[in-house]
Length: 239
Image (cartoon, rainbow, N blue to C red; front, top):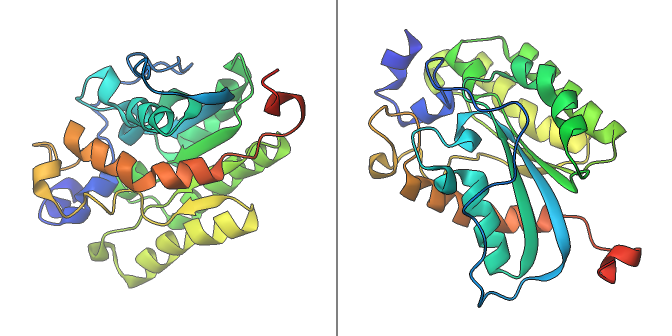
């Protein structure tokens, strides 16, 4: 099993979520427990962000308010950004499963997202799926989002070296190539701040702890804020 091999390698986090992890609802709800304290002065209209991914977003084995989307919403609001981050993370999702539910999830949103954070591919690695399949599925999702004129922040993943140089090169190269092709913002390696820090990883040697999630948020909140489109027209006036 690859999990046994990867448990020796910090890159095990790329597995993202095991098949035994509980699935989240397919239709995401606005994150609860992430309201900004009253003293925080959020400004401007509410910014709708959809966090679409696997258990790294779903919040495997942490409280709902400790998931990446929940912590990200709080961090953005602490910066004065009136963010509302919806959690569309489903534990166990491969890129193919994500592709199957993307359009449905987008259609189910009450308001069109101003930004989608796309984080998938770790479970493809766990299952040793061909990198060409992962790339094709990610490309199809980016194509769908481009059709809907929704900006994207793509969370990159990297393959562990034990999968072979050719596999690693093809898999790792897919994310920057796709970001360039579809004009998406890119975080080159989403879990880089925690993957080699066992104190920030749960006992399963796969998922970040609540503290690890906070580190991931701190490392990426600038990328998310920068990927939000500028407010123009009537919306800029708060209408």
